[in-house]
Structures are given as structure tokens and as C-alpha cells.
Length: 144
Image (tube, rainbow, N blue to C red; front, side):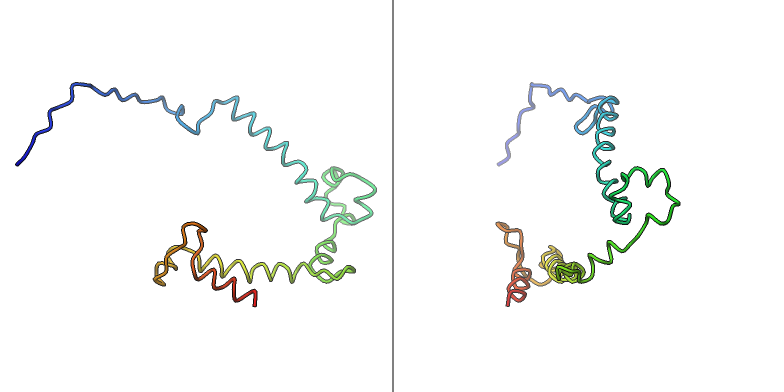
């Protein structure tokens, strides 16, 4: 037995928005303001980056912006700060080894918890924790 559905008498009106007025769009003043805000926000980061390549004396004697004025004065630039951090320093902390340890933990955990790999291994991801049994196994092995 077949029943026919009567056509609706209520006409739906579909409104199309103007180009550039949908979700995620902004007016030009908003875009300019956000760009300006982002550039202002990046100034301290730029200062830290420049200071990290300067010698200790140059950091204490002048501001980081003076390095921009004289970028070819090579006596103020050094990579010894990074060499000191990445090797064992006076406090006995070796950040280079810490980076390697981080990669040893994160790369297997990321690879084994990726959905294509877990599906190919026949395992389901635990939706409550967004982890797979394989990544849990890696974490347990690393704690031993």
C-alpha cells in the first residue's frame, strides 16, 4: 500500500547573504584592527628572539631594538646561548636530552593513536579519552 504525501502549502523562503557577509567574515576596519593587534602582540616575541641571539653584555648594555639598527655588527650576535641550553650546563640540566625524551614519547603516541592506524590494527579508539589501546600500551611501557 502506497500513500502519497500532499504537497506543502507553506513556501520556504531561502535567503542568500551577500558575498563576504556570512560567518567568519569581517568588515575592513575589523580586519585592520585585528591585524594591528596581532602585530603589536608579536613585538615581545620578536624582542625575545633577537635577545636570544645576543651576547650577555649586549643584552645588559642596550635594548633589543638597537640590534635592529645595527644588524651587521657581528660582535653582538652569538649562538652560545643555545649551545649552553642544549648541552649540560652548570645546573646539570641537559635540555637537548629533554627534547629527545619528548620526541620518544610523543611520536609513538601520536602515530599509534591516529585513526587510520588504529582501524588497520583492528582496534577501536576510546571515545571518552580519545586514545587508542595502542597508545595506552606505549605509555605503560614507558613508565616501566
